[in-house]
Image 1 (cartoon, rainbow, N blue to C red):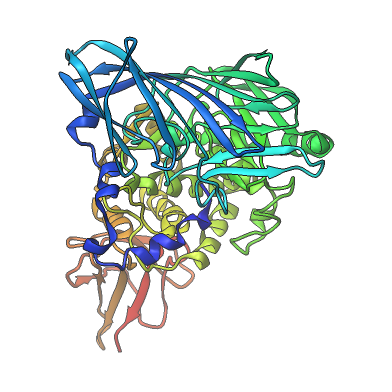
Image 2 (cartoon, rainbow, N blue to C red; image 1 turned 180 degrees about the horizontal axis):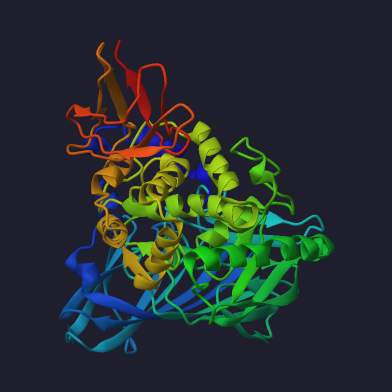
Length: 545
């Protein structure tokens, strides 16, 4: 997702918890037994979209494995949409609604280990996004020719804003058929592979798309418009990857050279750093949207108007961000971090956004050199506020502050600097995507893996920058007889991040300060000639007089 998304979250984190989180938040964010009792295997989402009335109607088939004996379970659908019926083996089931949760009672016990299914029929006018993708829902627009141009975007708010599902990131469906019916003359593009269309004979055409890889709910997308299609291929680490582009008819001439200049260089860089593109079976797509962009798996929403930068701007102020299209590079980075590796809880959305922000630097590194990439990371510091932690509160559908983007990218550059072995760092990034391939993870999974593979205990480093708002300060003392010592001032107990220091003109050396005063054994180091690597280490420095 895009960095402007989390400004409200920063403010909200200063509200007392008993005022911030509600019963509705818990029903959405908590994994109760009514949610853990079933594991989603397959959905068939079949929805008709009436653009003129901004109305949707249809059904979703839930096929699941019972993880426990089931008499009752919860699925999710926003309460402004009507549940017309829940059907199980030909019977309509009783259900109750509480906020955006729906509780279904079964007529007989579903045995643990069995595979079963039910279908939810629903309808209504979905929430209309006022500022997609930062506030979720349906984005109803028209193109310059007056034709309907519609998309969905719902990260954070939740996929249940427009379709019934088990709306929790921890349970990704294994595969999915997406069938979207739209008025004749329009095209729907969704995730995965196109499986054909059919004229329904009533003025509507159904477009079928099949996703064969696990996908998280918020990535499931509808894109409706007067689209034209063109295609290419990329020879990557796992063979031939299909590239498909769906753009408004009026923009095809601009789209062809622009996508060609950005997509293959992106794939080259990211396969180098992160390993093979994670969804060869479903292909890679860009789909033009009226909103700026979103990382919809294998169908990335693109709305950056065929220009480099972020709507033509470079947020780092270094110039490096204007050499590539921000939306293509950033949102495609989420195919590895966010879509391949997905956080179990929205609180850990920092995993998605920190690595993807950092992927922008690695794209620059691959094509323009390491120094350029690090300059970009350093420049991004000007967007950091340090007002609240970048991790959210668990089990209440709460994300951390918007600093998860730039501060997260800075954190990963520091970790790379601490490891001090670029090939080892590259193998760690590739290893993350291999170890957690098509998996959901939490904070501990990521921190433990990086610590284990680097051979360095980085737990206190991650804790300080992820769990606390403040950055640490390195405090120095110099005595008249030439002795130097330092210590960390930090929120995290036991914080002991190594840092690079040198005399002016010399070579950087690592020291390992703790929260206790530690001598610095670097010959010739004085108050007047010492330098800290604050280019790569995002810290405060305090020199006592």
